[in-house]
Amino acid sequence: MRWSGINLLVVGTAVAAFGAGCSGGDQGPGEPPLAIEKPATKSGDEQFGPVDLALGNPLRVLVTREGEPVEGVDVDWTAGQGGSLSDEQESDADGFASVVWTLGPDQGTHSATASVEGAEGSPLTYTATATLGTEPPPGPTIQVLGPSGGDRFEPNLVTITVGQTVTWSWPEGAQDHNVVPDDGNNPIPSGPVTDGPTTYSFTFNQAGSFRYFCRTHGGPGGVGMSGRVIVNEGQL
Ligand SMILES: [Cu+2]
Image (cartoon, rainbow, N blue to C red; front, side, top):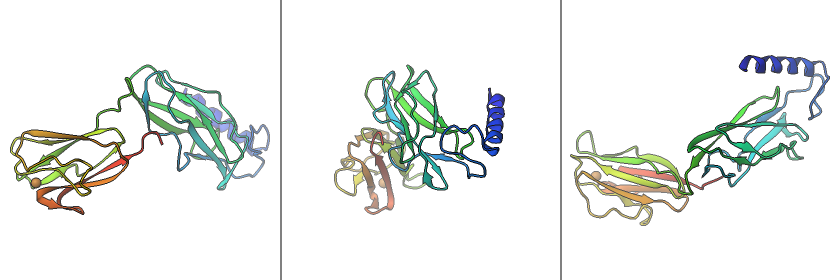
């Protein structure tokens, strides 16, 4: 499978070099190669969606040659994990080609690829997280640590998607910590400083970058025992 793919690529390159058999994009002799990339916005990469349903946004690829969009190029798409894709279309006047991705039946990480024979950057891999129902997957847990080993949040930077829940966990031995938001609301304050073991959770329903700190050992603006949660819009 791999080997035949490489052989096809070599043959395709050789054919293109002789200036014959081009499949769109006006590839001629001596012309620089096509390149494909994920668009900077709305690529459709890293979406969350329920199993067996189409993702909310299409996957998009940008086809260029020397930085200029190229129209009429056939992009080959594949979907793994039992997923399926809408009919392929050639790149448009702005160099974009897109497909709608319907995820397969299993929960977890799914992948799809876009490829253009002989193009730089090919193949591109897109991933999606398939969920059961419409609930976003659980978010990360942040350890609330110290004094042993130093007073700190670990990790002190996490990145999530809107709708995900972050859990702070004070293990046994953690002393005099709380979670206080710089902006007063995100996350809602955990309350008075407390010892472990205990937990506190907050669901971020707003995109942005949110700093927080421990009243005893830190302060706003990233001072001392502090951390940050970056919340991305879902389904970019
Ligand atoms: Cu503290």
